[in-house]
Amino acid sequence: MTDILSKLSGSFDKAQAAGDLLFFSSTIVKYQESTSPIEYEIRLCPALQNKPALPTPHFKGTPEQTKFDPFLPPYNPNLWIGELSDADSGEQYVVLLNKYSVVPRHFLLVTKEFRSQASPLTPPDLVQTYLLLAAGRKARQPLFAFYNCGDISGASQAHKHVQFLPLDDEDGPPVEYAARNVKLETPDRPFTLPVPYANHVFRLPDRLWSSSPDQLEPILADAFLSLLDLAISTIRHDTEYPANKPSYNVVITLGHIYVVPRRQEAHMLAETGDELSVNALAFAGMLLVKSERELEAVKKEGVGNILRGVGLESVHDLQVLGTAAEARDEE
Ligand code: AMP
Image (cartoon, rainbow, N blue to C red; front, side, top):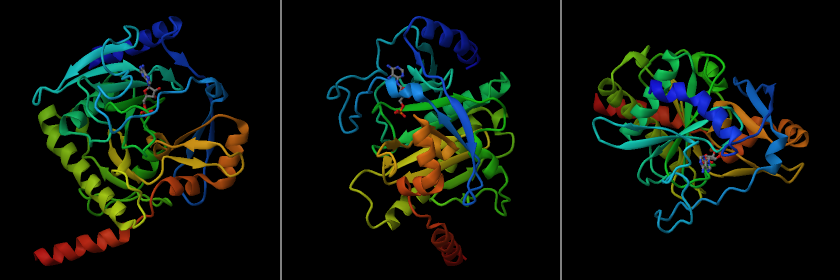
């Protein structure tokens, strides 16, 4: 883990200099609405207008059926950072720099063998992800992770990949501040943030980062499963949910796991007609726009409205009532 993190910066510079990695510079605008406790960071990145079109996802195919899988060997040596292996399951992973970076040192944890991006994170996926976050904390290179699961989650590659973004400080992405401020009566139960779309959050135990992989696994797996259950329950309440497998976004920090169910991949901005593709980053509090015009259109429509449009209505109150009824039945 430490090796991987210590190589990131040098490898990023080298890959960019060699032309194997394209970096798109951007500026950040902070933006907050009264309907949300999250102070959004909207990245304005005009250079993205020239980004080469990525291959369309092929979620339904095996690797043989898909045209090209950038996450299978041979890897570009300048993007390859290292390999990891989960001691218990033997599952192997490759760490690659993101070929198209808006944030320097954006990297990916990909399964060595093809696994579907429409499949949930497994206990080994969760443990390796969290170990990388913990190593980042130790090396004073704070990070957070995200996963776009399913074909309407904003993912562009069908091969399973968890993504990591470096942060300027240990405070986490913008959503973390809002989550930390929620006072929990029952700390080991999922909760929800007061935002206009359905979201399910689990607060991880204090100082979880100092735990061993064996200790981490049941904690992360149980937390993720409880959130996944709620996301599926939220989707089941939506009688018009599209005929897709359930899609959702996941954000993982040292302190919390967030799961946001999705019903639509992109939002069409009324003002510009542009499709704004939304992935887990938006729910972490980080949006991406390609022009000042798009930025103004986003502000006019409202981030909360846009995210509600691509997400689902919260049925948290019903779910809490359901849990209370279950608890009464058990008594
Ligand atoms: P997503 O779009 O969320 O599925 O994330 C996939 C990421 O993989 C995107 O951020 C792309 O920039 C990145 N990507 C696409 N092709 C490659 C490649 N050949 N090597 C490394 N990263 C890539």
